[in-house]
Image (cartoon, rainbow, N blue to C red; front, side, top):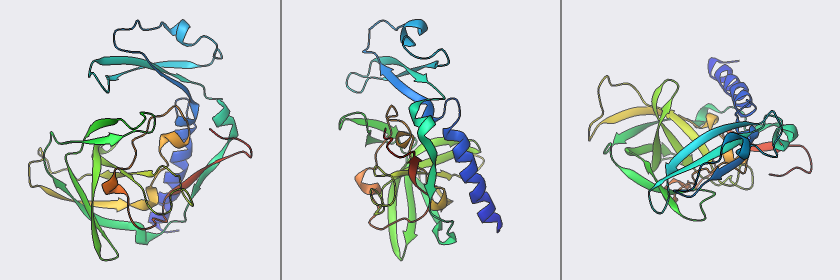
Length: 244
């Protein structure tokens, strides 16, 4: 097994550990948001009717319409119905042809782009997208919008993309790909171009594939690739008869 294939197998193992963790996506059984100004329920009230092993975490965000601070909570249950029915994550075999060298063109630290989310009924939320992710596939250049994010190893990008496998071979709402940014040793400035590697073998099913209480961003039009990406995760495997 090559080093790249070994890293791929470790990625696969890490993903199983991630989604089956006590607060992994499979464990999320409820996300509840209060309207701005409403009283925040205490923990006992929020967990009423759930097993004693259930855990509560708090959330806050700007309201999508008013911008006022909105509070909420999540309930986690490691032995949730989805966790009990979970049998694995389908994946394409490792393919070195899907490790693509590209570039990140920094535009503006304050640049934001609206993204639709799966639980927002068509409304849009604005996310930081400080530049363009550019790569070439079969001679054609593609320019996509990747969200700014922080990875365990430092600053990175989160590409929310769709391709021609969605719904037939892979998760229907699209997939995520995380891209590491190199460290320049200084703050980025307009016009900076950074080399990046897009390893589509590590494309992930988003958290909403494991819990219908997750609110995942959906691929914007620019990120809907007109070709099949037969690399990375495909579908969540559940016991026969189970559905989210």
